[in-house]
Length: 322
Ligand SMILES: NC(=O)c1ccc[n+]([C@@H]2O[C@H](COP(=O)([O-])OP(=O)(O)OC[C@H]3O[C@@H](n4cnc5c(N)ncnc54)[C@H](O)[C@@H]3O)[C@@H](O)[C@H]2O)c1
Image (tube, rainbow, N blue to C red):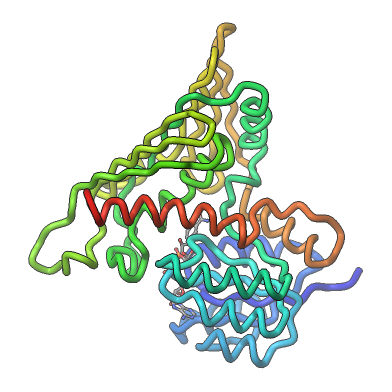
């Protein structure tokens, strides 16, 4: 079996999940990691017997890789992807594609021109319970979509700055927008109202709203709403609800490896708890695509750009009118 050499830029929370999955595959060597936090990079490198860098561009310039994982915060995108494109190096990138739309559009153009293989971490797409809902809605299209991201403010230093994270709709609720597109189809109208953050320490245009409500209309004729809030003591509800003729679907994420599907029909309620690891599933699918063994990447950069543009439009509507 030929082995795959991979690197990872960013060694924070989500990189830890990807690196654990990558290290568990017996055909993968994690050979290098990078983080601007030198201590963190060194500690993570040591645990994988990998080389440590403090600049992801140096890693990309020096290492001979089959693929790279880009797990940096939203504001740090652009140059890393462009460097991977120049080296024809397939990359997996975490959502959101960037803190803004222009960076993601620029990278998408480069990726397309190069015909580069990519994958984006909209991990719900790799859950069997989501695929089950997909089959249901193909036969019986939803009429109503409701989505929720009701949570605490993440404690990472970049999150509460809209200019660094992109804000809650772009950084977190983007998973909900991705499910809306996957299960109901493209959105034609989006309109957002929000409760602004206040306080002497916050720059108004850099503040992330405390709560927001997004109204959606879909090309199919369905309608929807998405509620987000960041003022809770912990994760309260992250999930979606769909209503179609004769059924209701509820799908919730309690943790990345803990999902619940409830389907209500005339015959009663069927619940299913999923402990599938969607991070390992999306990583395996990308590795198999890179190795040329199969093509089960569920979200390419081009596909993710459509979700990112929707989240961005929702956020911009909020800036203009909320
Ligand atoms: N798919 C999911 O469900 C999921 C879950 C959590 C986070 N994420 C995404 O992953 C990304 C990272 O989130 P996180 O929670 O791991 O954040 P984090 O703050 O825990 O980790 C980010 C790491 O990147 C490093 N970093 C910052 N700028 C860098 C740069 N230019 N080059 C190299 N390293 C740099 C930081 O020092 C930090 O160690 C975010 O975009 C987030 O939305 C996705």
